[in-house]
Image (cartoon, rainbow, N blue to C red; front, side, top):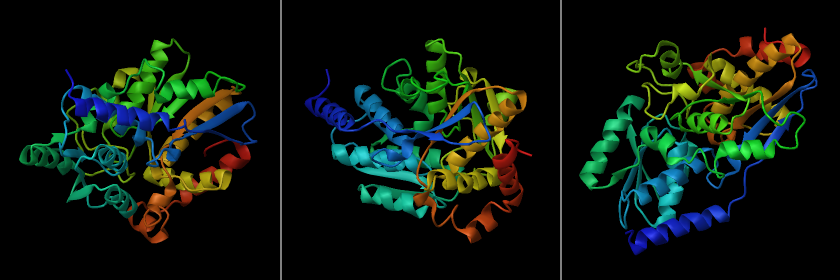
Length: 353
């Protein structure tokens, strides 16, 4: 039987959910793509500013219902930033100490947001080190290591009516092409792509799932080779997505197709997107949208029509000193001119060439 504190904690999280509205679905108006409609599910409007707000809520409820968190438990998470921001929010809501274990390269804005919610940031030099250090801290402090990379796909109810996939299809209901040809998603833990892919199959929909992976991430290599022991000595430069090892929450069987997206394409695409929506998006949104544009270009060349949906994962305001700073981009991402030219050509012809 759950303790009165656990019951109260679950009630607090549920009350917070009831105060939250769903996120918007933004339609991009691209005249060159006659009969092809592109939509972005704007997850930046959550209270903590990203897609990871949904995951953090699910992880806390999962841990509470499993008896892993009780009154006073220190919660530890390994994260490149956004999940830790959202978990710090829920930890404060429940009055729990929170520690985020993250690479030193994490955007300063995310660090500030974690600290704003009362969380503590514990830095490591390489993204490979976050797992063992989180386990060490949890053991030392007798706390709970949330471990989003293992539990993301388990904590979310992919059959229910409160997940992101259900929301997307509900919001598409009155659109010209209500059942998307493709949903495109980039993996961080793999939990969101697992939720969307499972929901599509459970609801017997004709939508296909494309997962797009950045440079220096092993998900694509695992998907194409089947070797889950693959690792990378380098970490992804697209913050929030891509991993140096195959995470337990990444489920390749729910994916219909994968693409590898160059980092320069991801960054060029968020600059391109800004002129359509009038605001900045984070780099993982660029990875997602470049994958969408690749599919749209192929559909356009074949004379096909239909809709494509992807996610606007978080706001670009978190990355003003990195992905929106020319010197940082030049040093860390490189020359964007090839992809800037591609996107200009796409505007005129519908072709990415």
